[in-house]
Amino acid sequence: MSDENPLQPPWLNAPPVDSYPYEESHDLRTGPKLHPTLDGLLPYIGVWRGRGRGGYPTIEDFDFAQEIRISHDGRPFLCYESRAWLLDEQSRPIRPAGREMGWWRPVLDGDRATNEWEALMSTPTGVMELHLGKRTGTQLEFATDAVVRTPTAKEVTAGHRLFGIVEGALLYAQEMAAVGHGLTPHLSARLIRVGG
Image (tube, rainbow, N blue to C red; front, side, top):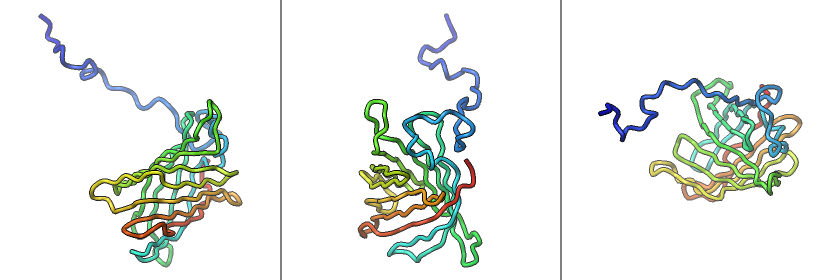
């Protein structure tokens, strides 16, 4: 009689695996080839850093610094990572602020990208947003199609984002509907390319 348990999956006692074997890159000079459906967003790929201003009717206005990393792994989507930190009047860091992770992908017609895009964005504060939008040149405009929140997250019900590459910089403006307010300006920033 065998000592093996027929109900135990074979991977349970398998040897450890090596690190993730596929490259992801924010630099088009290295790493995998960019998927052709992403050509329209090629100027966005990179690491961006800069400053912005935020506010909302329920909070005081604030200054922040931010780093955004937009990368790819050769498949037809972009990975979007953002981290921000609050700044005092002398531009010194006060504390970490918003973080966000997401994916941008083109809507395809067969194997060709259209000017329509989808974006999934998630925050560690329990808010996930599904955005639908359009690309016009180097401008991307997204609006929420759905917002999902954990039971303890703040009430966010809608969002609108406008991204653009202007004179080599990444600019964006973000509106948010939350805690009983309709779409209201919330964040805007100008970031310069520091990598990629």
